[in-house]
Length: 111
View 1 (cartoon, rainbow, N blue to C red):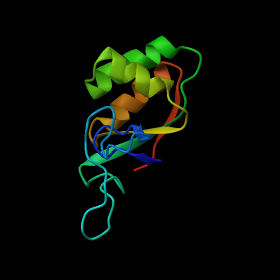
View 2 (view 1 turned 90 degrees about the vertical axis):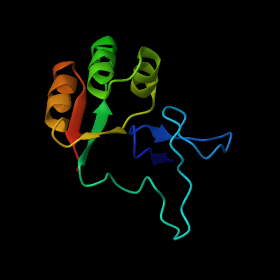
View 3 (view 1 turned 180 degrees about the vertical axis):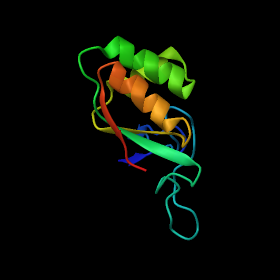
């Protein structure tokens, strides 16, 4: 499994579509063999959520606001196996981290 470089979701693709199931970003390796989800781009930060905690609804709300996604996408992200990674703008990463930890999640900025 790999992490989507656009939305940060962990990609598990049993249907072998070659795309993230949340944002439809392709994840196949390019001609050079480098997978597109290798690392966040220079202007982005990656937050690792190790545990969503007991207050799942508050974490879903924090993800929904912080990532500007719909309810279903945020719920699917929060329901997946921990740890998972979320990619956001580097300037917004500390704010989303504060919202997630305030909601009871255990998270940290990894890049």
